[in-house]
Image 1 (cartoon, rainbow, N blue to C red):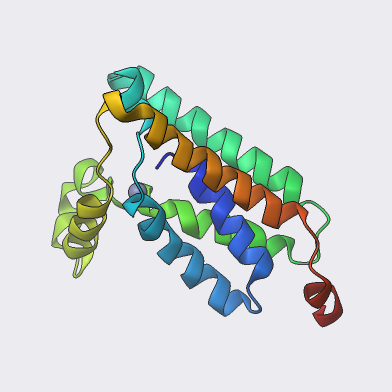
Image 2 (image 1 turned 90 degrees about the vertical axis):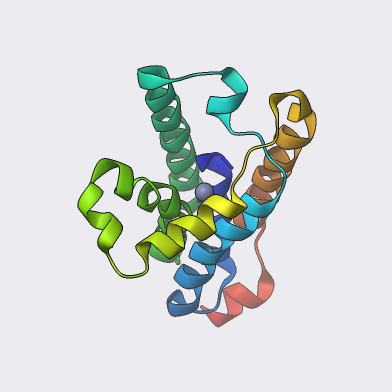
Length: 158
Ligand SMILES: [Zn+2]
């Protein structure tokens, strides 16, 4: 999936999890669950490469982070929400380590983690974009709902 659904889903997990120690690992794990859903990546969909690809990914990440910041602002669990959003998206950065820094491919566990991520995160063919876009739109809609919608138990617990 692209960055925005990952970031917002992580933020929603951060808001709803009862503990920061639970929220961040769950948000990190959510990355793999969301990547396993059928989806089309923006870069594949638009047929981009090189600098345009990098700029598109950067813009997607900035939009996701900005939306999460706006929705989390002033919330008692703002730090959890933001850290969880970060944890939910970071795997796509970690997956680039062996490409950017070839020495990191020898790090214990990194190649297994990257292989696992890569096995889950295949993009649908561009011809199947309606499904691949819909899953991401629904993910964003659900995450925004959980970020906006107050939960009585959460308020009482705080
Ligand atoms: Zn991913």
